[in-house]
Image (cartoon, rainbow over the protein chains, first blue to last red):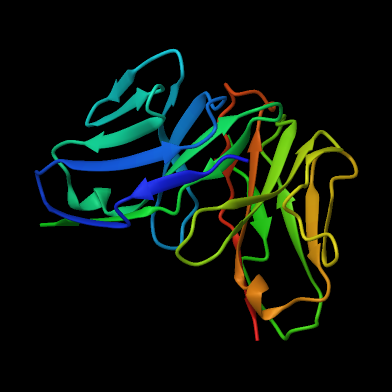
Length: 112
Length: 115
């Protein structure tokens, strides 16, 4: 089955700096890669996703890049703000039932 | 639109007891998922329904876990008997269908503590 590795497990940045979280996946058939943000005690919420037919997608301060050859994808957050502090999960989906496999998460802390 | 609803939000039981969780997906969503999220880890899919049929239950510990979605809307997940290692947040999610273009929307989760 699919295996998703996510790094780093914790990331601390100063407000205004950029943050990058990286994920690798094992199943070359995976073709959908969402990123979820989960604040403490709350539900995961989709912040951006990318499909295998594109290499990059942006939404304001958030961008995701995908390298299908290397089987890795990354989340980039620019001009970080304290409200960006949360756990971020990457996931990969593919196969006949499009099951999502999640990484272990990255705890992002943005210091004011 | 209303989101995915789950109840209860918290549950504390002793090992070997049974427990049940309830989920009401977003109206019109055909696909429903149950995930287990252990502290410090990402959600792990337990079971996926398409309407009232099971699409994937390969990671459901069937000796103690069961789930149903009888009318293709609400779903219940049951654990009987519970073990200490079942302590986790149980998340329900739904999507319009089970294709790759469909975003999964999560409920608030039920936090289970087994003592």
